[in-house]
Length: 228
Image (tube, rainbow, N blue to C red; front, side, top):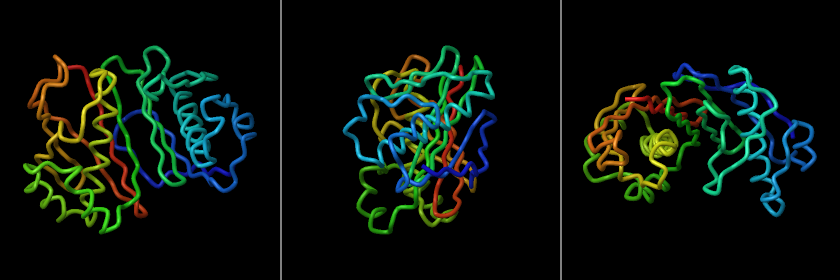
């Protein structure tokens, strides 16, 4: 599998990250050994796309962790498919249509990190998925976001994915898109408010900040869950 270690994004969070493009059409199972990653038995019957995405994400995570002094760590997955990071490491992985990225931190103040890459939705997708992603009370903030970006629903979808990843390690249970309400935005930041209590330290009304940027018809969102 051919990879290119060149990121189109400039991450805003101050943590170690690695991004790369990869070509799914060139994937072979032998690529796992080539990149020093064990081939997970659960992917034995998976399609090439899934195998390539999993490998690319693990390679990104491995390279990001090197900046934290961690090498040769095998990143397994839990039953809920979330990565099992080394002790004292908080991390996140994302991939979308031939691009993968990972971000990690060993800061004791970081409870979780969430990043998400999405390719721009089509106009039809934005129309069809709006009711599944947006709350009714997000209309005003969403219309403001539309003045900053032509694909606002892609950004909100990605942001809520990043929020979920950043908070899940603390919450330890599933919560939907309706748990976070977009309340403010500008050209670079989105501000959300939790609509329900997710944890004793994440009560209803807790505000969550998400950075966003759009490059080459793709969106990157970043969120961090810090000790309060």
